[in-house]
Image (cartoon, rainbow, N blue to C red; front, side, top):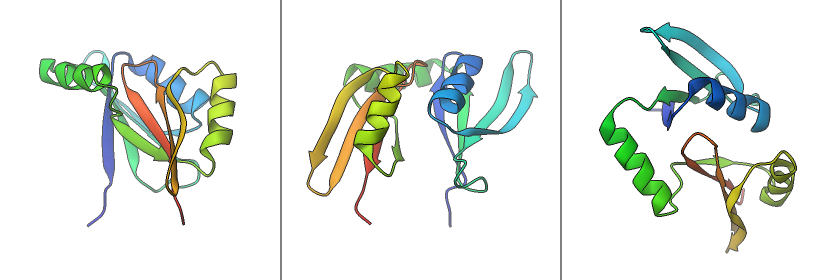
Length: 130
């Protein structure tokens, strides 16, 4: 069993696509119209183009908004991405104007930081021991 797809709920798919590709560095994999205004829109890591896809899912269901907003209010990230060096990625992203809700924090062998994806979610980046 493998994880093929996971999702984040976004307020605006075009804005999310820009942030996740132009700022975070993912690449668009699928962009298929679904209905009148929504899209099946996924991104992947350029390092693993055949790897797990992240669906930039429209925030249409009221329960999804309640869930996502409650996580943000409590400061809980919806997703976590691994990076080689949290400190370097933190500095790179800050230079691009990304707002962090948690600066890099070392917790034993793991270093984490939490950013605002501009689309309603908190995302954690982490460097984990090999």
